[in-house]
Image 1 (cartoon, one colour):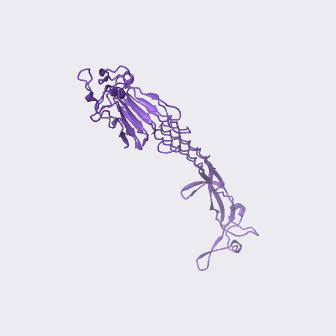
Image 2 (image 1 turned 90 degrees about the vertical axis):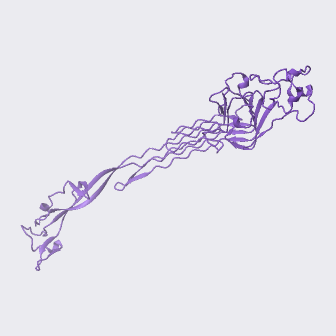
Length: 405
């Protein structure tokens, strides 16, 4: 933590304290200096007490009686803390204020370095306490964190992180109870940008009509006739069980002569080509015909089915919002669709590519919308409860994000 105390104490040592020195230090009417002017003022509603109430000024009398010059040794006009270097999620109200927050001494917290949030669930700097005449002066940087981009296929971006949380828990309504925030021209109170919305998945491709064919040799006749026309009258069965699946007849195929089986002299069986088996045919024979006792059809069976269309491509992720953690990210492109095929028809179906995600918001801006919604911008300065605050010096360059109380 890099916060130092730069409070100036007055009238240290043993030198005499004159009325003129009190006037130079604490103010007051130039030409008429009354010692009673420099009694300690404990009114919580006063915005610029001449001699403020503070822990350091506790010895100074708050009444005209018992007011002594020597009691001003080590006194202060203002209490000052200065932040330098880099801090994360700094709680301003928890710094070493020496029990002065609820007193009317002017208190200044000077931001010269950088304060940054570490996630969208916390802030770069926060204040929550009862305080009077509290001032925040920003010449350095107070940064919120960027929101995450939406996840592919319609994911919404996350909101950007807030920069500064200010909550004065005082129940008083006068100006002294309003925390005064001044932003220097070179200072920055920048909220995180919202994450970009993700792209949606593409459409699936159209389903394909496909089929599988198998050829099965079915015996149509084996009664010994030699008349092909008579033997081939029998057709193929309408269905066929092939490996446990029912196929429907697609074509009766071609009827072809098979072989003739005869008994060998040894009692065995043998097959010979049709052209050599005419001498032992049974039944009527017609001159000039080949003798055979078996005819076969090469039956063609077909099973129809649908092939799902090619799967859609995934959408692209949304880009992260800009913040203390990173620059604004661009959205990713969607992925290409997948392809399915039907070998029988040589046709294919390809899904559409996914939609691209969009960029995250820059400092204090919402993320872009796609199929997923962009995250809201973070707030530069905000409060939930407590007394309203005042902001001065703000413009579009040094304050990014909402900051109205």
